[in-house]
Length: 191
Image 1 (tube, rainbow, N blue to C red):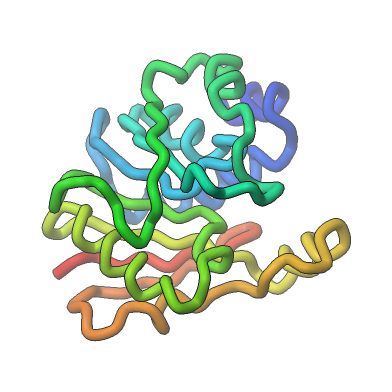
Image 2 (cartoon, rainbow, N blue to C red):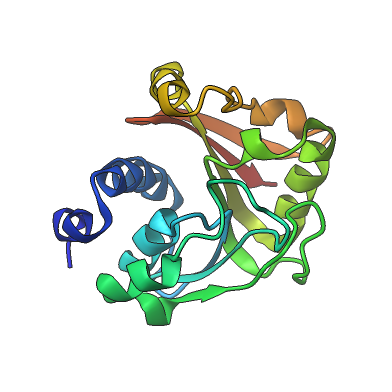
């Protein structure tokens, strides 16, 4: 199934997610079957996109997350586009990930960091670097100003975009920034 066919099942937002996701993946050169982590499942759009690219996806969000963006029926969405077998869900807190060091080829945060309490963001960044393989990438997608303005129409309390660089502390990383369709993409490659 291609992106347009998937969007027919999942809605037009999926095309935007896929466009920005593709821009990021073009920089990463991940091999088919690579294990990746999608932090913040939501409706599952990003996990589904990653699975459609042939990646093995572990996705999750805190069990305690009761916001309007969490606890969506991602499994039904994944089944509708035929990728449910490539996605596994596990609840976790991004500031204390229950995964071994270097487990993932890449760690993705699609529209997540700005929802994390500011005092936890450094821990989240540090944990992402811990669980990514040496030379792997941590990728944050944060909404552009235009995207935020659209979000504020239906969710006036939606937080402003986060600046991932403010969270990296003394981490030794190579940083790349890309302008996506709806998101600014921040890639940090572990050195």
